[in-house]
Amino acid sequence: MIGNVTDIVSGILSERRKIPLDTKVYTIRDIARLAGVSVTTVSRVLNHRPDVNPATRELVEKIIEDCHFVGNTNARGLKQTSEVIGVVIRGRSNPFLNALAESILDRAASLPDHFVTEYIDEQDDEFMTALRLTRQNRVKGLIFVGSLIDSRVRSIQHLDLPVVFTTVNAESASMPNASSVAVDDRSMGRLVGEELLSLGHRRIAVFGSNPIAGDSLAMRFQGFCDAYADRGLSFSPDDYRECRFSLDAGYETARAYFSSHPDTTALFTMSDMVAVGAIRALRDLGKDVPADVSVIGFDGIDLSRFTVPRLTTVEQPAEEIARCSVNLLLDMMEKKAAPRHIQVKAFYRKRESISAPAHS
Image (tube, rainbow, N blue to C red; front, side, top):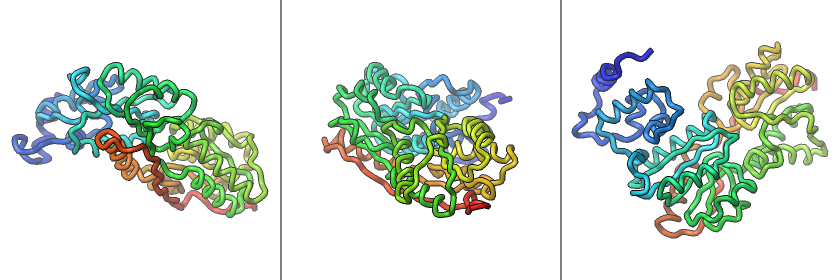
């Protein structure tokens, strides 16, 4: 239970001995550090999001007031009076996307532009959210984080403003004003498949989203299947499970799948969070990772380095993706630059969660 907010804030400010308030220009990251919360939480408070604990909101607002903070992400009072850049994050429970959003906001802290953020569930429509933003604000640019490129994108094709899709290649969107930044998801999916097949695994499960959608996750699965085709093998559709990207979903999906497929020796998940939940489920089913089941995730979140065993994963460079995304948008807004589709390098991090199957 949080105590008197004024006392807590006073204690935080005095104990941490920061630069005096009258000489320091505070950033959103400073506010987050003083409050002991993430940058995304501060952004939610600034944008009056409802999904913030009331006590946390009160604490953050008090620190903002005491620090005389006027940040670029603070959109209060900006509606219809100033232009803003909209950032729509699809997947509020995904720590990789949250880290990516934090990097974008951190980059934004040094800019004169105002950024308005919207966090939505992975099942919600990011394009309808963007349209609502354009109705409520004078939006001059949009960044989509964790978006899905499908037929729904037609709803924003009439918008005469620059757009950047982050973590997904948007060349298929057929939008003359859209850029994108992403890793080569297909080649990394192939790499994962090659790794597990070369170790001797033949019954491998895959947990992802819609396998035929035109997004980065579908590309990972297609690359994974490419590795099978290269060896004259075929992946069984019975070993694919659609799964929400959360610990609970990873746990429940793994528990249900492995209870009925005890001979499966490896698992590839499209998200580290799903992998972490799955490892717990396997442990509860009496299976050892990696002796009984090898597990590979995707994203490279910080937690992957601290699981038991440490998770093998494909790491996406969040800070580089964020920097490129913001720079692309600024180039299109300020220099009228033509849209570009940038591919950044991902990294395969082999750790403790994979090994050859016990009986190959």
